[in-house]
Image (cartoon, rainbow over all chains, first blue to last red; front, side, top):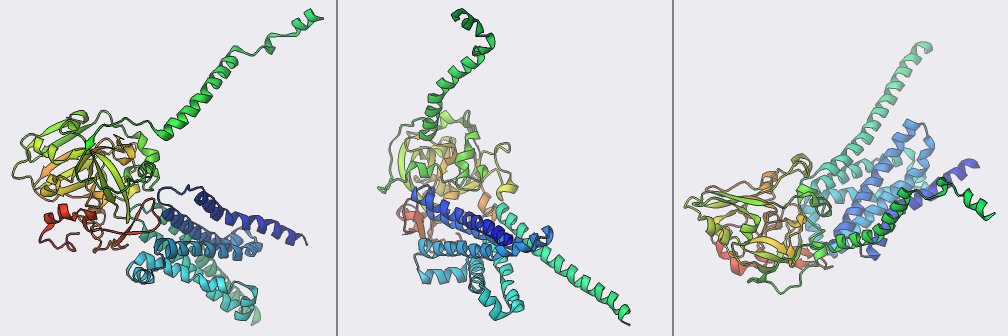
Length: 212
Length: 308
């Protein structure tokens, strides 16, 4: 089957490409090339890649419509799982290298500091999505319910952007760039679903006089 | 045959003179490029001699490479690595500092004059950023009060206002950085007169690198780093508390005093601990960054939660 071969020939390089940022980070860490504040460097790099991969995952559905390439759906799960992977690295960095598993301090942080609260929310809302990412879970939940659950990614992306925006002290250019991208990707969904329902209505109206 | 062969060699076969010279120049340039690479790394900064001053900590100074590549100098970029890449455009010579306001002897010092106001001392201070990281730096300078005495403040001088250089051609715009420029800072008169308050011209035995606030900056070791204004062009003595840049940007998070205080958290992070650059774990932050014995009396009777 040529389409299988094509899928493979894209999936494998894509998988490797998604690992490159982590590999590069590990390589630089090994060569002690993470700058004066390595833990901050790792935190920022993993956070950045979580947001980037969330945005790329969110871009799949709009791109399928825009390019008329429904087959792009085959790569979405992998991208989403990589977003979760970088989210886990980011969260682990915070938990281990920043807070040294001081849970008292962490609870206080999550409770008292809005930017941590937002980041925490963004992270935990990815967990059920990663857990139910298998074909088995789609079957068990049913397509409709599974899809409804997986809309949690919208919350994760928005909370992630807010987390970044609240974190920076004054130069909000980068967080605003992420916000704009996520906004475009979510707005496209609204527009497309509005169009679909409008089309259904018009079709419905056109159909009724024929029937009568 | 031989002759014929010689005739075969046409002008076009001869290496053009230009190429030949270029090749020579290229060959000559190779070791030069290597040397340039080396010196840009080692950055042969001008040496600055100083005697050992008071108040030095015996803690180990942070490696110079960290202090000159991990900077907050928003005029040259808001990323920590950006000032060291961009601050080379700052023209630090000639340089003058205008001293004005409530003083009997207002005066503009050129840098050389200012540096001769008192003997240069090396002082190894702890330096604590509001972002919860810290460094130990051997600064070179002398107490600001030497300059203050030289201009004779009048009774109206209750505060000192500082202003950084601003050059819109080579620096971020306030819109990009998210804070107002030129950068301004201030001290109460008794704080400014305190011997710990250092007017600083160098570090690590050399003149200040641009990204660390060349050619002249303040160092206030008991306050968060942003109070230690860089690249000063103006000092004004005033009657009322002067505006300060970070306070203007976000008064809820950055107060006028901004003394290092582990018991008063920044709204977005705890100030109880800090990461000393080069260390893996975190260490406890000390009241007034460990300078309480020297400066606590300046704030007797003040509610430090209110005047953060």
